[in-house]
Image (tube, rainbow over all chains, first blue to last red; front, top):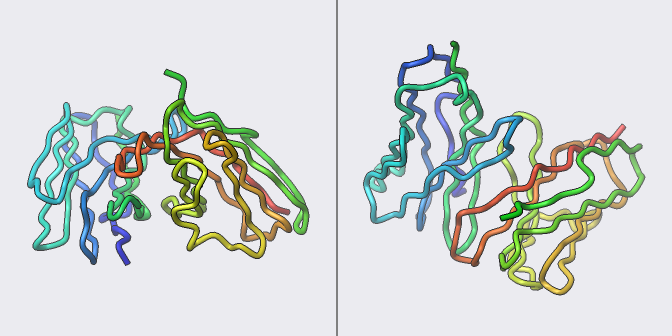
Length: 109
Length: 114
């Protein structure tokens, strides 16, 4: 299956700390995407990293991709209470994206 | 720019009843997706349209689920008859092109089957 598997399932940190979540997958991909889901804004695309890229940044987000290990990580720096949400990775291949079951991040004020 | 619209937002039905969900994607987006998201899990793709043609419906339970995208714009997803295990949030998403991968999601319809 191309489905990404996120780790950990749940993460709780204090505001201002960094949060790291990981995604592993099993087959070839064209790209890997990260999404955030919370009750206020639904499911929102955060960042896409292509299979030939190793690292990508967007604001406080840093994504890495290691295709040899079939894994990706999402780092959120200087976390805020508003970052509390579920984060999903999705593997993209042949026009189709397959989602994992997510990491639930809680940022305590 | 208006986002993806879905209706209704909530629906409660008895098992064996029928239900339909509607989705209007972002204007100009060629690709439309329907996902099922069960509580505690990630979205699972049910069907993917490119304009008004089906690209992938391999995970759609075709004995009870059907979907159409007439004129390549808005879409409806129907369940007939519903089962208890169909209780979930049904998400519609759209993307500009088949190869875009960046998907824009609607707010979803929360279905409860009693």
